Image 1 (tube, rainbow, N blue to C red):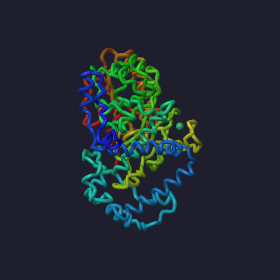
Image 2 (image 1 turned 90 degrees about the horizontal axis):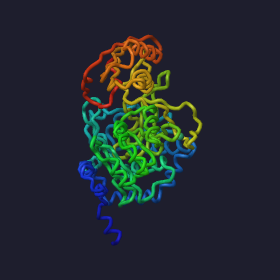
Image 3 (image 1 turned 60 degrees about the horizontal axis):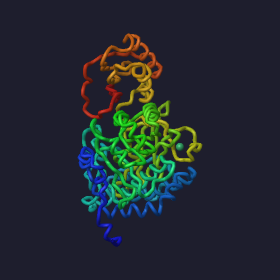
Image 4 (image 1 turned 90 degrees about the vertical axis):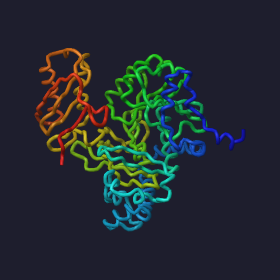
Length: 470
Ligand SMILES: [Zn+2]
């Protein structure tokens, strides 16, 4: 077959179900994005062969070089948006922006911050560069806490670049880079833009993991090198521990939901594999990825990240500029997440000079706040729960911690049997631990229930703030 013939045939990763009917059925339910076509796969493969080494070097450059690269990208991005996108034209005109006026990143950081609800008040044609391309553009929709869906448009080039950055991250989690014939295994409702690049760098995707899914058997059949999963599947993966070990999987990667380092360390230990977390969003794509030293390094050739309005503890709003989405520029876009930057400017032991995030706290709407409105890190709250309620106890099934106001927290528990010691003692311990985290004495309420009350949105929210800030 000539090259043009092979390019017409799409490699079907789903066929590798190993004659396991349950795997086959689940895999067939995975959504196939329209980007997953031979033409774009071919372009991605060509770019990967040509640029992967260079992409690797990029992240190892000095901070000065990285910032210089970002400034030149940003200047062009902002000027283009100002010229061609009505939304930015109006927004930037009102603050006196003129073409070519950015001479530093600190100039750039004076531009207004935008968010989903602001963009949502505009018609799609007003927030993109070339409205005539909207019909054909790639879209991803996010629900958002407001409940109103938000659509992000991106062009093929952006999709390809995002995918190459994902492959680069995968390589960074392996001792030896991915080979063309390697498999990756994905337990995730949202797959990658490409299931393979013309049959190379293949991904097998299960959009869900069910109690009777023969995951272990299938891993043994496929021998993937990486397992990419939602953190909430980790307890179920544990049941396939032996098969996982024998299948040759070298690392586990988590994304989409927040999980704590404590949680990941636990699974890393019991599964005998490193676990690396990724911070990404539907709007921007990959934002930061974890290295072997637990730091989250910003993907500096994909995003310019700022932590804005940091509180005394260093937690601030995550504001991102997508450096590659020309079609629908997202410039100084506030995600509604909070995170904390590393204060030291020195290179990480892994060799990266990129911006490091020490902690990503997830949704701002959920973060507990002190009466001074400082963030109380969710990881610290979960560690307290872990030490006092979970580790010493086998009978606690589920819990939820709710902040009612600046002083009051409610703990809801669902015990399967009697707690390991007197509940008053447990609550006292927890109350003093929480008081330390808040820096003042808090009131702890407690309710034990047969079934945790249902939640509207996120299935894994165990930390919820009901106290509304204005
Ligand atoms: Zn590092």
